[in-house]
Length: 206
Ligand code: GLN
Image (cartoon, rainbow, N blue to C red; front, top):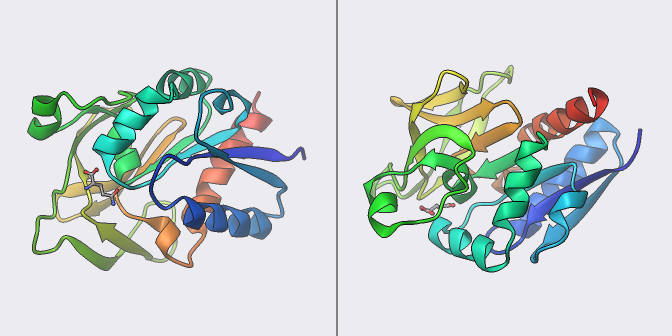
């Protein structure tokens, strides 16, 4: 098996934590991986998989454009390269945002057939942790929600993977995997392992 190259878009957010989780997930799966931090144009095309981290989606949107990384991610998506977006990363991958996103003209990569609402859990519960059931896991996962968004509408090609109240907090569409919570802030590598398995599937089916 060749060494996998996984790129973390490292413009802001929990970059080091994702890197750490990826190292552990690669070890658990017995895989060799090269994890690269992407801050500028030019290295997305060498990636077998890409992670868009949480942070602040408005900042992430602007930085993706100013660094010229947005078009590169869209090209990678067109080649079906697996992309995992967590929290703000999920927002930026969406085709549609909420009223605030529309009003401010916030840029979205518009790759996934989902409509997201930012900060949906409100001020009282800005940040919280709760056990969630996820479709592909046999036991619950600790969801760490930090001013989290959720998916309020989705297309027929999208598979919802986890619900909280009436909204979707994890979903998948072909090569795209989005999570409203922060898997990198747990010790549980199952989400990163699931993502790496998507990367492997693509390589094996090429
Ligand atoms: N509330 C942030 C946003 O709308 C996302 C928060 C996060 O990534 N933890 O961009």
